[in-house]
Length: 444
Ligand code: MV4
Image (cartoon, rainbow, N blue to C red; front, side):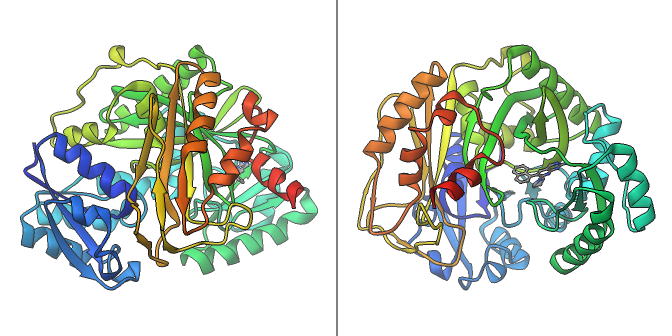
């Protein structure tokens, strides 16, 4: 096992990784910006290194500073968490060249999945069902029309370097198509420095369901339903999906596990699908540990970060697929330092903090009473994850935990979740990717 791991992240995920390292007796190195001197991840780590000023570009994204911190402290591996450098193929490549283990897949796999056209081609060949569309890049409006006529309208145009919803355009008919193509290319060029786009059939009311894969083609850990989102930011995630049965779960899980095995993929990964009318359609693959991984941990009782560490040393997974079972139901609420109605960020001092506890309740957070939330980073300050034997029991417990949770001094999204717990569609699990935005629009 590694002797010392450097955690190239901050906030709740840095704590999550620290905890897994401590349980394995691995030494920990925190890195931090000058704005994060009082952050919990710095306090809990065995050692810490200041890597730069508040701006992420100069600190948490500063590859040279992070590699230097690694060499100074003698850490033998880096866990990137999510966001920041977690899906940066160049970073993984530089670590490979320095003989530092990147706790994640190879730089080659990160690069393939970062190109949405390559990703789709790759997984399609390996038997994963994809959204019908162009086989590759499309730049000529006449070719676009030929493809759209074949797959049928509406169609969606997406950036090959995109993801997270930027640079997407929907065309409802042939008369919209040329303009949608032009504006998608222009937006993609401006946002990503790459104007390559592709075309897909537009699915109008899908759910977003993602499959957790792990390691070496032997592990799939079920799915998460992440359909409740606002502006491409997930708000609440649950496992298992309220709309899948055991047979569907096993089928899509096996297809994904086999594909990543054939690919020689190593580490944690998420295969993202849109799900509509009983069918799965691949859209993207994430090559990192995700924010919402705890719901999978709660229903499988498997520590995903521990497994990542074991896979990264070459030891492999601690479980076989036969040992994996899905028990009960878990829901995660993302607690952001934001106004629950306007979603305006709310940095500042947490004057009082009381997290909930009790059976089936988990809070992953890096904050504490008296902590000053800096304005420079993502507004996620914690996650409330609740487990129950059934979905109704989970909801009942979540309502109770939300009532116990007190965060004073700043605005948080907690009031939104308390509201959602009384909504019929949420209670029934009857929602798609558009549900939350429609709900919020109707309220105001
Ligand atoms: C789509 C789609 C409908 N049809 N693709 C948005 C983010 C990007 N990762 C993929 N996205 C979508 N792709 C087809 N062919 C609708 C979305 C989409 C979406 C997907 C997942 C979660 C939330 C979403 C919100 C709006 C649009």
